[in-house]
Length: 117
Image (tube, rainbow, N blue to C red; front, side):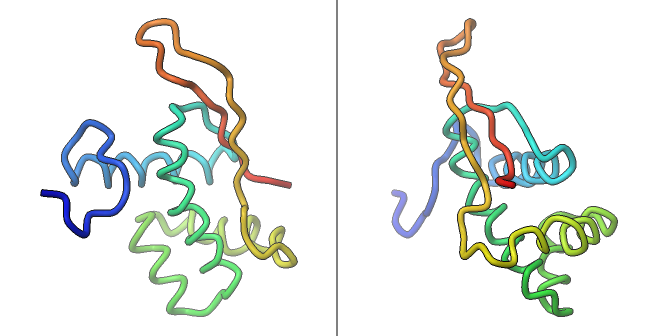
C-alpha cells in the first residue's frame, strides 16, 4: 500500500526515483534548460523550487541542506550566488514547463523545463 507516500513512482523503485530527480535538478541548474518527460518535470519542479528558496535565504543551514540534496559544492555556490538572486522579488514559480508533444518511440509527452527569467 502507498499510504503516506507522496509523488509519482515514475516506474522505478524509490531510490532510483530519488536519484533521477537529483540528476534532473543538477542538469537544470547547470544548463538552465532541460528536455524530459512531463511527469519527470512536474516531479523535479518541487525539488528545484525548494532549493531556490533555500538560495534566497542564503544562510548556512540552507546552504548545507542544498549541499545534501545536490552533492556538488560548486553547483550550490552557483545556485546561491547566481541563480537565487535573480528571483529575489518572485514569491515562487521559478520554473516553466513548455510542452513539445509526444515522443516518437513510446508516445510519452515531452516538455522543455527551464528557469524563468
